[in-house]
Image (tube, rainbow, N blue to C red; front, top):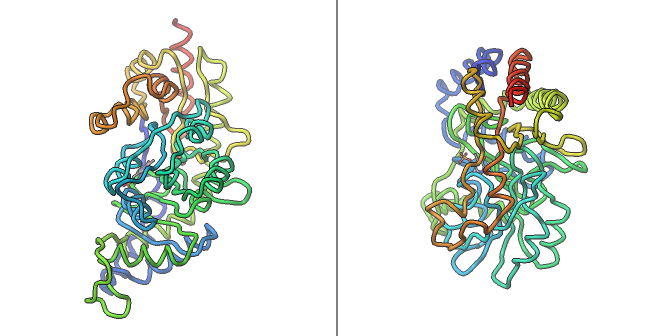
Length: 368
Ligand SMILES: *Cc1c(COP(=O)(O)O)cnc(C)c1O
């Protein structure tokens, strides 16, 4: 059984993708090409923001957001310890301090009440993560940001297409960051990322910075010191083709999640992820159980792959030891890291696979 199968996703699009790549190859339009410009425009329009900017990766999208908002040494950025390393890594890379707060045990996202308690005069931004495709508590976070004059940078790398109240993940904050890493809900064929930007001026600052600070009028006049971060024309072309299927991908992921929930809610001590009134696009389908390690081992023996996102909360990573946050600092994040298990989910997953997973989970708990 597969945890994710991209061959199944690409097979129906293969001819179209190859034709498009052949056309770009013949045209030689590799950097900042037409397909990129079209994709950026479509992305901005579908997210109802002033601009969308293609970049190298989701990590770069987060890094550039902090840079564009002038966040650096002496500043603090509040984020979650229950996420992929990139979220907090970039805060440290710009010279600022990541300030972790605990999560809501139901959504696994930042707990707004915990956020309120750690805001200081040095706090510059909130960096919520829409983890597993589940929208963070944006209403509460936005009112905190407004009250304390903070920017919001959304890590929407796992949540493309999630929406609440007609607003999409990535369009609530000043900047939204997306990843097209192949395993993401909209994955490219290599690395890639996108930034959604609400303000035109901020967008122009990012455009400058991500292109060596080169003047739009004269490429070899460098107005500021920047970096090189771009989304390749070929990736943009592939992503434009795949973007048309995104609503379908999301619908299929939700259907699998709904079926999992119906079948698993009363199995053992399992806690299923919330579905009703959530906007989740189910990048991961993540359950909790006190018998996580035994269940994972049992499923593995039946040939069922599972993953643990995330086994080590970031404050307990060696790289963040310098922050001095010991064990017990964030009890909900730590409890989650001991109890979570992500089951196979992807749009094209055969129903029979899902039923096999369900059957194996039931037999695990029946044998206890
Ligand atoms: C994937 C991911 C990133 C980083 O994206 P890359 O494109 O791999 O650099 C950042 N944050 C979260 C939550 C992610 O899942």
